[in-house]
Image 1 (cartoon, rainbow, N blue to C red):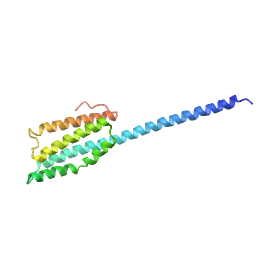
Image 2 (cartoon, helix red, strand yellow):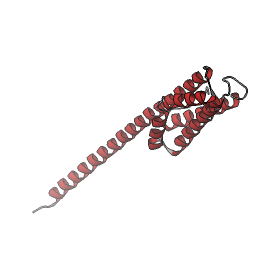
Image 3 (cartoon, rainbow, N blue to C red):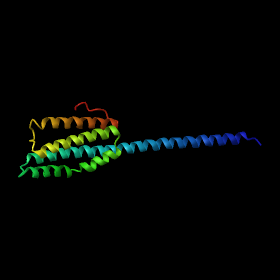
Image 4 (cartoon, rainbow, N blue to C red):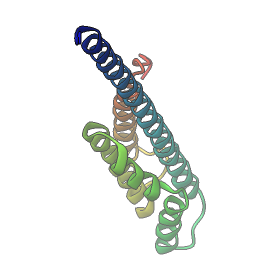
Length: 159
């Protein structure tokens, strides 16, 4: 009996199956990477939106009239809580790479510093608030830059 045709057929089948398995594996890896990038994009959008909303809320509260210092403090802190920033921050910590999480945490802490200043009675637009706002904007810009890089999107060049 001649074994060469059988061995050739078996070798061809093994090569074909192996090639199919490798192609399927690569396709699965690309799909997983695409899905992970989409999840990060959603989390980043949620976090940045919550930071912006919290900033607007504390500014609006700080511009309002308050009967007492404790009432202003409570109102500013409640304004931040109502934006979902804490949940968005936790989601970022779960899915973001270390450099993005660190930048997001810095932006979050800059917002809290501004919140605490407004809660103490620092006036919106005052000389005392200006460096806090500048620091917050710089932290936000750095965070966005890192998020865009992680998502494979080039820099805007406008920040």
